[in-house]
Image (cartoon, rainbow, N blue to C red; front, top):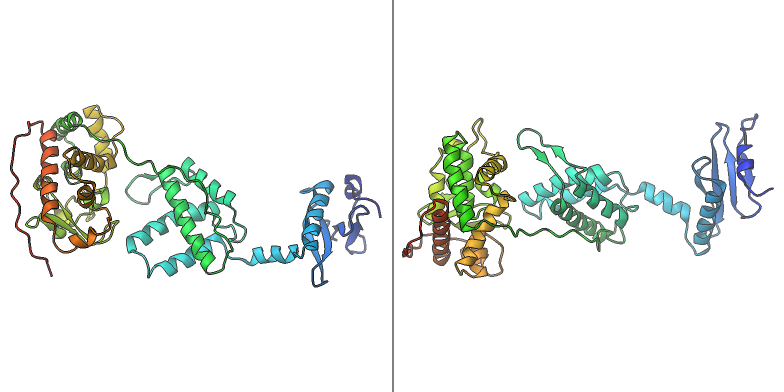
Length: 416
């Protein structure tokens, strides 16, 4: 038989008797090309396993591979077989392996009893929005670090951006979202590794973009400009709820959804705190200053929400747009909702409060701190929250800060 060339492949034709036609290569033993009665031609290679069993592996169809490309692949497969591997069995194993979508579903089912409901909901959202659309069809065994890196790049580029159902605008990508998605995928693949579904975690070692920690914060002058913009915006018909929410976030240091989804039933003015049942750091008590509580009184609390929606029974959600309009009016740039929280922390730092105190004010998880604030708010933190919110309120309202002694509040009893 001759060496398989393009001329020989082009001359192949189906057998009139309906039989398979095969041509063997004279240069590489075990390599050949076959023509099926249907007219489909494919390159293949025969080899023997370590157990001396004969295997046939189809390399690809004629037209997809050139004879030289197919011959190169055949050499690689024969080399693998000579070292004891079984390329055909490996291919079938990959085809039978579960997909990334199936692995994600297994992980979510297993994690439901182990992690917080809010964390599980966030994981599910990232899986449905980013992981499944981009790599869900990949088999787990065939997944590579290059696939994970490409997923990260696609999320950064906004390939999975889409309009949310109902209210709330558009979900976008970005470095932060991509980094957190890859981190979560690494956790899922580690789950698979421990259960011997895969041998290695291909997400490990992927260089992730910097989280982009917030450095922007409002100066006293900028706070004053924002306060004037609020007054002018109210006169022009801006939503009272949105302005009150911006003011509350700046005066309390709360996260966006901690404020917007705040039910009034957990607000404890007497103790000077909010008794969160669930936050990013778990259930906790958050000390709040009286100026922040005053911001809650700027709107009516329909349906039990601190910041109710204008229509329906839900809470207010249009905060980013309100903040953008206020910042344009105040001629402020690069101000996001998170800048309000960072400005609260920066003010506390400027006033000389320790990192440990600031962590307590923001609700961060700090070893040895959370347990101390589990039942009643710490008096020192309540005073710190009062002083920081007063300083920011003074800046917002354009007043001069006068000396004021904050009385130590009486410790409230823990609620049963």
